[in-house]
Amino acid sequence: MSEPGPAVTQVKLTGLADEVARLMTELGGSCEIIFGPVEQPDRGGNVTCTAQVVTHSSARAPADGQTVHVTVQAVLKVAAGALPGTGAAQQVEDSVTRALEAGLPEVQQVNTRFISAVGLPAERE
Image (cartoon, rainbow, N blue to C red; front, side, top):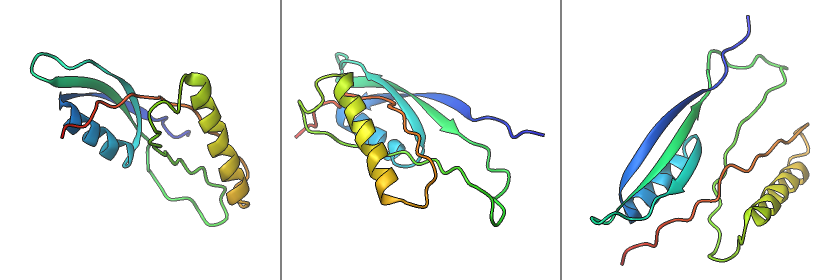
C-alpha cells in the first residue's frame, strides 16, 4: 500500500506588518510553507498574508540501508533591489542547487523549486 501524499493546510496571517513579518520568518524556519503575497496595510495598519503549510506523513522511520528522501526548506533574506524579477529568483534557486550538489557528495540527486519571493513590510521603529 502506498503512503498518503502531503497535506496542505491554508492559514491567513493578519496583524501589524512587523508582527506578520516575524511570524512569516518563524513559520518559514519550522515547516514547509508557501507564502502568498502580503497585502497593503489597511486603515488600522494591519496587513494580511495567506500561507499554505505542507505536512507529510511520518508513519515510520527509514530502515537501515534504505534510500531516503530528505525535504529541507531554506528561507533566504535578500537585500532590497537584489531580486528585480523572478528571473533573479531562479538564479538564486540554481545557486542553491549547485551548492548542495557540490557540498554534499553523498547526496545522489538534488531537486529544488522556487516557492515565492515575498516583499516584506517595512519594519517599524
